[in-house]
Image (tube, rainbow, N blue to C red; front, side, top):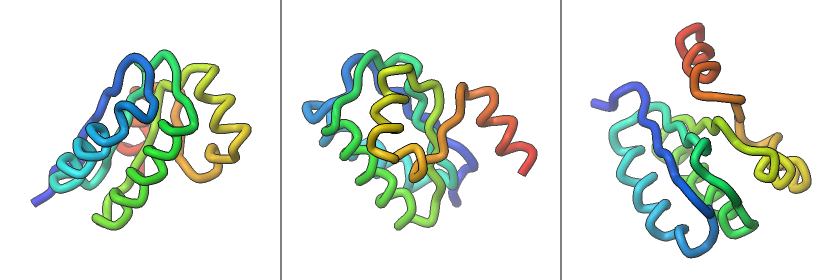
Amino acid sequence: MKSNLKVVQPSGIFDGTKAIQFRQEITRVVENAEIVVIDFKNVTFMDSSGLGTLVLCLKTVKAAGSKLFLCSINEQIRMLFDLTSMDKIFEIFPNREELEQKIINS
C-alpha cells in the first residue's frame, strides 16, 4: 500500500549530470507514494537538462497514478519555468508548509 507523501530534496546544481540518479530516485519513491514532493530549497541553479529531467519525472509519477508537486524554487528556477511555460505544467508552491496545508485541506 502506498503512503500518502514522500519528499525528495535535490541540492546544489540540478542539471544533466544528476539526471539519471534523480530519475532512479523518483522511480523508487513513486512505488510507495501517492504524492511526490520535490523540494528545491537547497538547489542553487537548474538548467534546461534539469527541466527535462523534471518532465520525465512527471511522466513517471503520472504513469504510477500519483501526483507531483514542486516547492521552494528560487528566482532563477522560477524564471526558467516562466520562460518555458512549464509553470503551467507543474504545480508549484512557495514552500513546503503551504504545499502541505493545501494537501491537508483537499
